[in-house]
Image 1 (cartoon, helix red, strand yellow):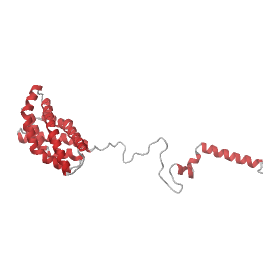
Image 2: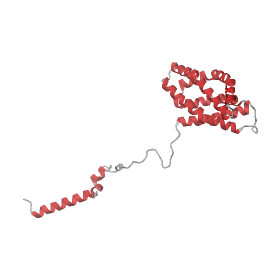
Image 3: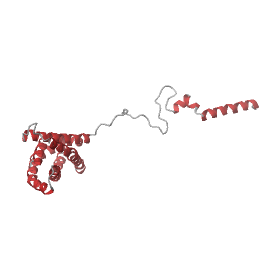
Image 4: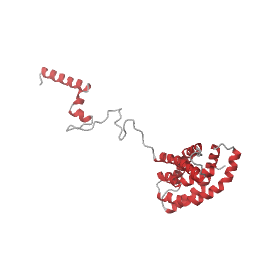
Length: 230
């Protein structure tokens, strides 16, 4: 039988142990550190406490995420629309640097940023969902749908938006569309079907708008000249 003094001593020790656990003192010990993410045999990576987030992986303080491919394609569309207008004014219309109409170039860039880039980029995503795949037959089907359905509507909207931004009234804008639309559509069909077949067959979806805009710099030059000719 244990002596009364021994029982009291054990009870006091257990009481101190309980108070130490309650105060969190064992967290700094060997097994407490293991519970917090460190092994008892060496250094380890400490896990974040409950309710706290760990450090962001691959993200520096104050860093901004890089633009996604569609955003870069929209920026490229605006820049190349502006470049097409510059070529139209300087090489086709031969205005010279002093006669260059800067507001017109800015308008064409705005149309590229706000209309051409978002609309064409969204159309390519829809087209890829409607006709998935990258075979030659799929590329031809995409080209037929693109040139037979999308291109006529897109071209009419483009001419209407350009006329409105140039200050034409509704009647004047409609008259100009009637004058220019057929010629522009026929020129479109002389350029784009082979380009689009190659684009749909060889180029990944995220790069299609940028590739089209690079090829389209001559087309943008033609559109700018056609749309701004009074």
